[in-house]
Image (cartoon, rainbow, N blue to C red):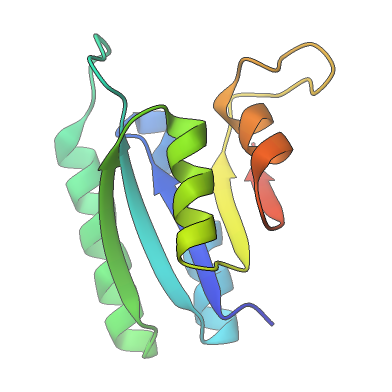
Length: 127
């Protein structure tokens, strides 16, 4: 159903939680999985680089075992813009991303809400 699945990771622990859904979707459909590391410019937030490296390693192993092609892309910039630009560039079929909660009417400042508004393809938001 989906040839290419984009899974953005912004190096926060919360972003890692929907990784299982992205892997499940890619494995089920024999999709190419694009792991996008998004580094916001000049961010003061603390990130768990070791946890992200672990998830990327698990994703690669799952892809290898399932025969799913896995591509890693690293970009920096405003997360929503980067995610949508990469989705457009790579012609992805679906974006899978997590959120701490989104109210689309009043929470347009969240990355997930912005991606939902700007994405060139369907977005699966995993709470």
